[in-house]
Every structure is written in structure tokens, then in C-alpha cells.
Length: 297
Figure 1 (tube, rainbow, N blue to C red):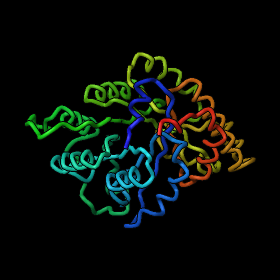
Figure 2 (figure 1 turned 180 degrees about the vertical axis):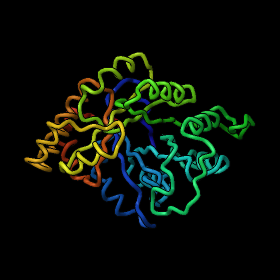
Figure 3 (figure 1 turned 135 degrees about the vertical axis):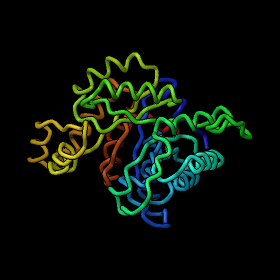
Figure 4 (figure 1 turned 30 degrees about the vertical axis):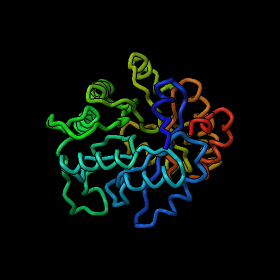
């Protein structure tokens, strides 16, 4: 499989990624069918790692299958919740052997928040520590500095919240992740690019690509939930008003407006489908001539 995400980001070309959840079972075919329309429209698909601490298929196994069955580049998520230091290193070495080389490093949600609240959270390291582990393997060493047989070649990703209430702390964490070996970032959903102004002034001095989140809103109820429950995410009142009047249709219009605006000023868009792949497919096809992802896959 030809990996192009890293090359496009290094050339400062615009990219599109989409986040998907693995199935809650042993059959990957339903997820394949959801992803299939995205081939030729996106540069990579993120495969989540039991998000919200709810049990799902291995993101590494699914990422391998997607790359081979659909010829669609993937970014697998890896959390520190479920694996100790030995397990994290073993998972990474196995992923590299399978040709799954884009990783998003995450600390992970606590088990008590999910569907197996009695499970033990490991958290030997956090996302920064995981970035260091992946970087060590890239340098031909385990996390203790012992030589391993051959080097990995991971493109290491991290997350950042550019609209955090404590932007100073968020930026300090971002720089620590870069020092750990992170080579690109993805963000939470952005609903007003005006909220990014302060972050962008600082980010211009950071020579690491950032892919900004976009979540199509299907209802005013979802928008209000995000405002209540997700720290650092804010849906403006005027967008909620539009959703109250036109519902999903307004959500599609808002997503198209944001996508076009983001493409003009940012390096990439990371789409959170919230289970509605058809909405994402429509969004990308209507902007297809401007996206230009097909040649990259």
C-alpha cells in the first residue's frame, strides 16, 4: 500500500480524514460498506480504539483489513488505557509489520465511563509517553533504550484542542508532544473559525501540520449536548437557531460552509460523521473538484 498522507502534509497540501468506529463484533463487513464510498474522497480514515471505553474490534486489525480490502489509507488510534508498556510496544511492532504506519496517540477514556466499568485501566504512560515509545521504535530502540531488530517508520499523530479554555496549558502540552516525536495533530470539532484566531496566530510558528475537526450537526439537540458535555467545544447560538428551524438540512448547509472556509485557510479537515456516512459522502462529493484527494490515494 502506498502511504500518501504524510507526503501530502509535508508538502503542505490540503488533506481530508474521516473518523470511524470499529464494529462491536467479529464481522468487519458492515464497516467496510460504510467506508467503501469514501475511497477516492478522503486521504485517510481514522480507526478508533474502543472510543468512550466501549468495547470494539481491534483498531490495528481493522486498519490492516481496510488498507488491504479497500486500498484506503488508515490512521489507527492507540490508547494507554488497556495495555501496559510491554503490550503497547508489542502492538506497535505488530502494526508496523502489517503495514499500518499512521498512529494517533491517545491517553484514553477511563473504563468506568464505558460498557465494562469493572475493567482495569492501565495507564502506565499517557499520550505523551506513548509518543515517546513510538518514536523510540522509529529510532530502533525499545522504550528503555535497548536495540531492537530493525526500525519502525510510524507517522506519529497527537490531538490538540485549539479552543481550550486554558489555551496556555494546551499549547504547553502540544510542544511536549512535538518533543516526544509527534509529527501531526488532529483536533476536536470547530464550529466557528473565529474561535481559532488566537490559536492560529501561535500555530503559524509551529512547523507541524494540524488537521482541524469538522462535525456535521444533525440536530439542535446534538449541538446543545456538545455545548453541555464536551469541554472546549462550542456551537454558536446562531447555528443552533438554524438547526432549530431546518434540522438536518441546516446541518448539511453549515458543514458545507465550514468545509469551504476551512479549505481556504487551513491545511486539513478531520470529519466526525456521528454515524451518518451519507451526509459526509454528500459533503465531499459536492466539493469533490476542490478536494482533489483522488490522485493521492
